[in-house]
Amino acid sequence: GAGPLGQLITQYCRVMGAREVMVIDMIDSRLEVALAHGATQTFIGGAEDALSFVESHTDGNLADVVFDATGHFAVLPMGLRLARQFGTLMLTGDSPHPSKQVLTGDVLTRQVNIRGTHNEKLAPHVEDWTGTRIMELFHTYLERGQMRVDDLITSRHAPAEAPDVYANLLVNRAETIGVVFDWSRL
Image 1 (cartoon, rainbow, N blue to C red):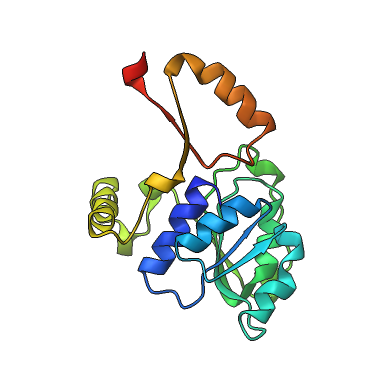
Image 2: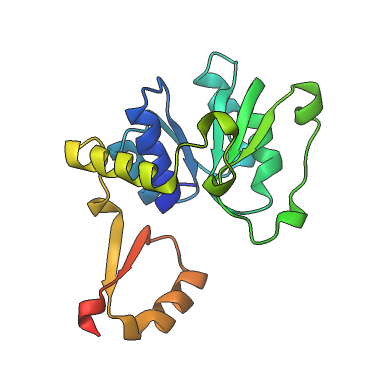
């Protein structure tokens, strides 16, 4: 997904030196933003239709790491198919229905690893990456111009508009990436 979280992941992957950064989304305008933020390839459609796309850009090896930034329970089994043997699927979107997530045989037959990313539960070898350190690094990338967030803000609203904004987002998220509520307009 190329919403706010997916856009930031795209930038992090680019900054960290990934050779290929492929982004999959069903909304063309979000893919255009992803290309401007470092994606090397984009695919308009769902993860269920992206297997040949990923194969064609990885010499048939599939992705080393797949990031699921959608938070939708149905994407987990589709994302597993896109990861290479011994690859990793990172669950970065927080599913409101985790009990509906389903594993596939890819976990056993291709030994795809699944990782979650809530940083209060980090593995011992990275537990010193506190929220404070992560934010400091993020701000360093912003200051250097290695990451951008200004163009991720697609609309600004007064706090009083929040009920209407959220109601609209439930039915029409296609034109939105980031929404900011300007508290000075209270």
